[in-house]
Image 1 (spheres, rainbow, N blue to C red):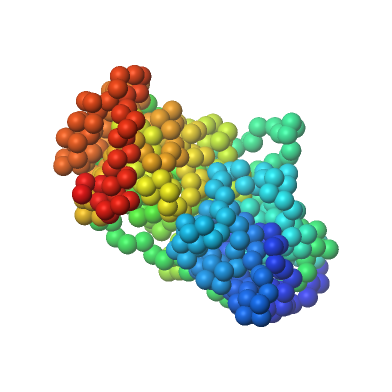
Image 2: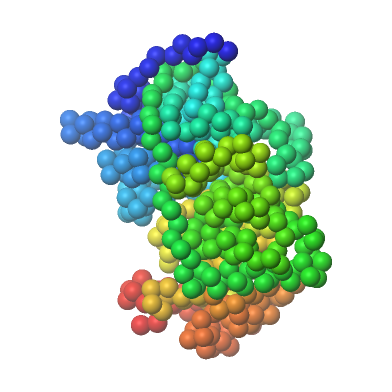
Length: 493
């Protein structure tokens, strides 16, 4: 392979290759595998350009959310004019909701294809974090795969951040494969979660690498808080439901692969599954691996995991790096068009477990926008899994803000997942299995099982005055709760 002949640049020198209005792609998926040095230098460059009276804002695409050195720093520097497909940054979210930054939500499995065929325009510069890059263009990625293989294939200029903190043995986890263009796509040959179909590295034309930048920073994923009583109650309902599905034979005795979204509630559910002896050891086919799942691998309760990113806190990551003989055989890191691919999800019979903001009487759910207008994060990969899962489970607390907000509403203010995809809804109050139920039966089950007791009479009163139809609604008042929330801060003031 030979010694890599690329110039070594400072972060500031690398940032100088990025110009105003460039479409820039970054590696990583969550903070995992996200570049740290160049984006921070880019934010400083933007501030200097603005101080000099010159415009400087980029269009930015990543695999999912990023770390604070990216979205937080660039948003604070007013350096982002357009963003896709996902974010988790308060400074950026505030700018998006104020109309100061254009934001495009996308299903995460769709992003590589959008890059591949130029749906969003050519990638001017890509910055990709790696443990090593070779003279013949092999790029060994760090803790997240995301859209990195697609960026490396299509970006006009490529900057490689070599991360000294990450273990070079992460290559043993990576399985990089890119899909051929249609109509020549053959079935993806994954028939069990840990099956490998690609290479341990991504590839780039060496002529397009303009330089490498060194950094030693960890991903800095914050540890999750201990599950609270509400999360534990939700987890208990999910575990009991899955156990009953096994007893009825709807889940085989060897169980099925699981997917779990990001967050404290999902983390609590995974921890509870690991502690319950009624659930056999299981595998995951998911998009993000979190702290709880690493502990499940160590205990033997999880047999292995296919994922797109190791989104674990620093202490847990150190544990993984110190036991690579153990973890490298049990974790596969894939690009997101494979980790989130609908065909693979359907073939494996994945059970999808995701969180939402609100649910309505008929099973539509909103996972992205408060009161229908204020973006929180984005749809991410939840749609990839919910629509194609063997069983789709969505969950949230029944109330929020001390009872000022009900998560069960007459009509959701924004639809991310419709009633055709959502099969099971869960709050701390209980679980509503909606399979096989018509709209009115769904409504009664959701009210009885998921709504907070103080809200149930209001939902029944609404349902009683709805105009008859297949899906009864009172269109004049179906969003009245959200209107009150917007004007008074409470749905019930």
